[in-house]
Image 1 (tube, protein in one colour):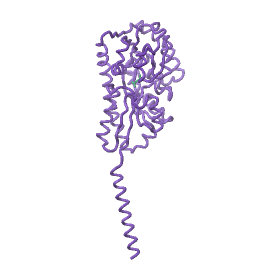
Image 2 (cartoon, rainbow, N blue to C red):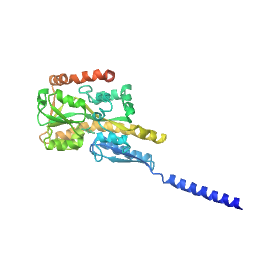
Image 3 (cartoon, rainbow, N blue to C red):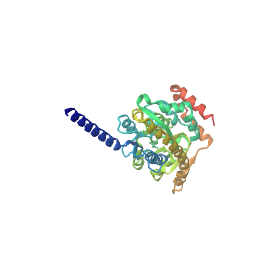
Image 4 (cartoon, protein in one colour):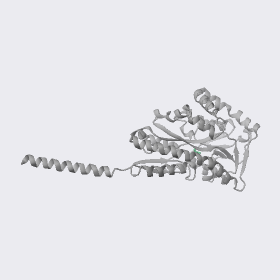
Length: 334
Ligand code: LMR
């Protein structure tokens, strides 16, 4: 009798544990991916992150949800990289200058007059060396999941910039990058690194005379209403690495990780097409604004810029001859 009572109690306990475990599993909270970026929603990156969220929540319903923090709402890009390492954020897509402190090799993407078109950048990104850069920060806890484009940078100021001499005495807002700061120093200007969210105000109060950026960022933040002269020198490319923390990505169940990577590949195709289209259409919209002037350089003027900026390439070559050689070889595949 006593034994039977014990068996009954045990059975009841087991069922209770089973029911509790089952209902817990049924109610399991989705994995949350917090994705931070610094630009407007109507940019290739802004639209890409929204698309990523839509596809993730369609294909992994109840399993993964995505929270987007645009326009530096929560973090600047530099803060985002640290937040990811501290487990306060799961994904971000900073522009390449923001990675300089983690791996100098990534400066290759911002090297003036190395890549003269987005197509050339793609050839390098698809090469073995380009793919290896995605995992080159893993020792620091950061994993690259892919590359997204914005477009070629243009330079804007309150005066025409045709020759290096035209830069003399001007102050420019730049992304946090030793390389880009040196680029302006070589042209005789002063560069101040500051987060993207401060650029509009810095121009408005004349803290800086000018800046460089891609057309979609200029239009989406109305920067053309503050400076109306643009130089299209084709000097450098603005693009992004989509990143996560190694710890977070490795903690995901295999099937979920694979689906997320598949979605990112699909979204990347869309973002890059959008970047190409917006580089034209947003440029056109800016040009329709009264008073806006676009300057293109003559072959001689461009050569003067290249000469002035050559030391940056030489300095990088000393540090990473392998990366420079790989980029130059990839460009030849055209
Ligand atoms: C900037 O800081 O100017 C850009 O990196 C912003 C961006 O993400 O495109």
